Amino acid sequence: MPEHVLVPMDRSEQSRTALAFALDEHPDATITLLHIIDVGNLAKYGDEGYFFSDDFVDQLRQRGRELLEENRKQAMERVDGVEIETELRMGSPARTITEYIDTHDVDHVIMGSHGRHGVSRVLIGSVAETVTRRSPVPVTIVR
Image 1 (spheres, rainbow, N blue to C red):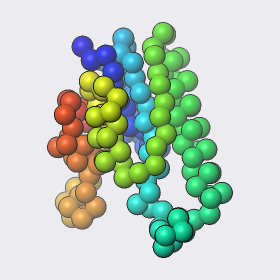
Image 2: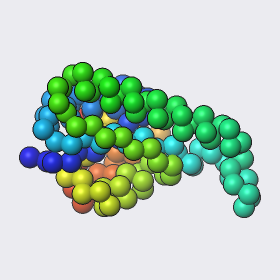
Image 3: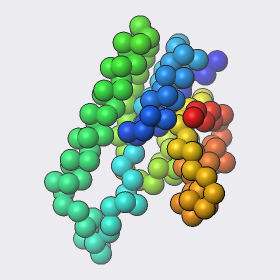
Image 4: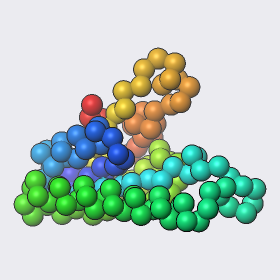
C-alpha cells in the first residue's frame, strides 16, 4: 500500500475524478494535491521576468491556493481522518510533477487524463503520458 500519493490538480473534472479515486483506493495514505501554474503559458519578457504583471501572477497563485483548499476540504469531508497536504508550484507541469516525485518520497501518482487524441496529442503532448514515461513510481491515469 502506498504511504504517499500525489494527485496533480487543475480545474478539470478529470483531476477531481483522480482525487476521488485516490481517496477510495488509498484512504490511509497521505495525499498531496499539487497545482502547477504553467509558466509556459506566461510569455517571457526578455530577462526582466514575465510579460504579465506581478499582480496577474499573484492572482494566478491565489486562484491556485483557492483550488487546492477547496479540493482539500472536499476530500476531508469525503473521507474522515484523511491526511491531505497541498503544494503550489510554478513550472512546466510534467517536469514539475516528476521533480516533486523525486524529492518528496511519493509512492504513487494518480492523475487525470484530458483525453487528447490524434494530431492534438502529437502536437501538444500529454502531461499524463510524459509523467508516466518519466516517473520512477507507479502512475494511475483516471479518465
